[in-house]
Length: 375
Image 1 (cartoon, helix red, strand yellow):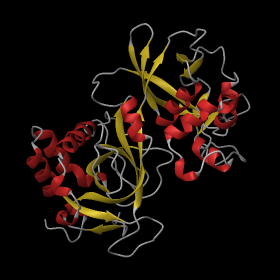
Image 2 (cartoon, rainbow, N blue to C red):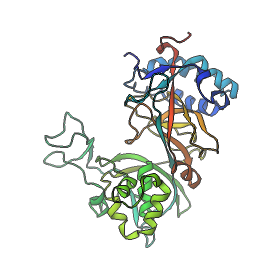
Image 3 (tube, helix red, strand yellow):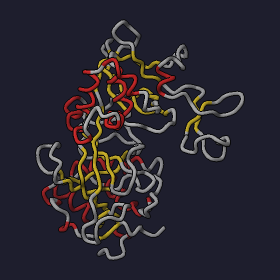
Image 4 (cartoon, helix red, strand yellow):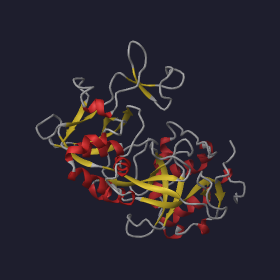
């Protein structure tokens, strides 16, 4: 597959802040992917960065001890060529394409109960037995082609229950509850983030991660509030959405049920409290170094240098940092679109909740893929 013209070759010297970044943490994240691909290779993205081209870099990453700052930079410069990623909308000229967009996500840490109580009344559910994957080969005529999940019935697959129906009891009595939360808004944001650490009332620390979804399209609460004239677009952050819900507790269901998509979870161990959950690339996410991308376009494991000069939430300085593509998300669509993993807990949530910034994306592609690279 030829390399997409959206990739425009650059030099490392052309990357703003490349030599100021400490790429050793990015190397550690890349190395985790290098070991995982021994079990199962990643699917190649449609833009032509074929998985096989990463073989030499993955092999060296597995073979060497984690290097220091200079060694990590040398590793990436030795194996890769930076390419500016042009947004698919075509805006911008050859030298300066219109920037892409970065947002942030995190892993909430929330108190939870293993049983329903007067305080803990909002469940997180595991995958129901009648929820099936579906594709075009077995999709009934007339079913929305967007749906990748369906409900198995004796008459054949049908659209699954949506959020409103599930929260009104469509799945009650099936024993699907993993844990119970005190706050419906907390549960909703766990659905949005796709994972959480639960501080259980019985003393356990439990992690829940994405298992499946009901399949309908995601509709953000912020978008609903803007459309209803409740919040100005420029003020929408996770923090402002939470504040609106606190001020309007009687309208929570009204707003949240506009998002018909519902997420189901599975339990997972918290093996390393410094790392995030195992995500779509099947490795634990590294705070500040793992990024979600459009997995249809990009190949997991690809390093991206992100230049977002107006983003200062990560440490107070302009965000110019090497990230590794290790997750994806339904809202992460396009070649120059990324979601930055901020970490776990409230402090990480304060960072992730305000990240929505223009950014230039530089994909570090294996030199064999780039015609002008100095091999």
